[in-house]
Length: 198
Image (cartoon, rainbow, N blue to C red; front, side, top):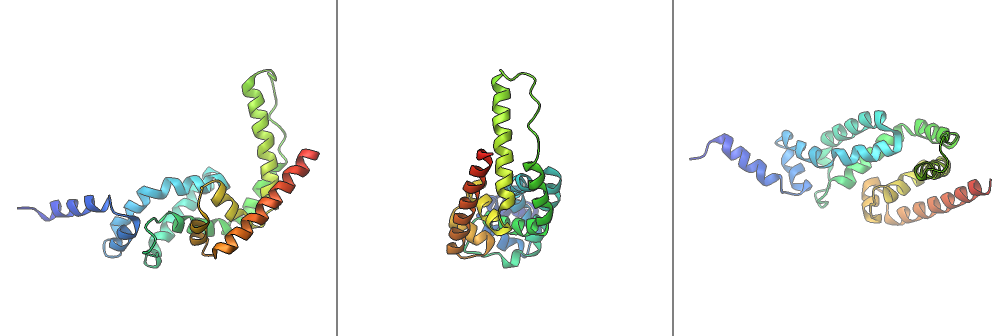
């Protein structure tokens, strides 16, 4: 004979292999189950945010993202098995609230001086200088993009989302994803060429 505790553990073990949509559906009546979605995706969402705004702010934004997801889980589209694009969309909305700070951060990065070199012959120093120069050039280009273009570009480039996933994450048509990505790539190319000509 099984006890209620054993039955609950059995149901939980079944849900650990279920898709996000099923877990979220079940969490509507058993809120504690949303922890499974958190466990699956919180680190990935945090990494995405940290790449955009740094670790400290990412801690806060990731927590806000997961809380907003929990609060709005009734609006999750059950046709989507993975919650990750939905979470990226929520995280992107959180980022928009901090857009001015992000733009200032990117402008500041683009003005940084190269790391002082003590051993220019060392391969690691050469790699570091190359990476820092590329980082400044990329930061300059990213700072010139409008927030909508930057959101699409970074979801594709950093998170490897498909056009369809970006469309779902940002709640925009796939055609808009394509046009924003095209404009962002064109602007980045131009920015990188301008910096390399200086």
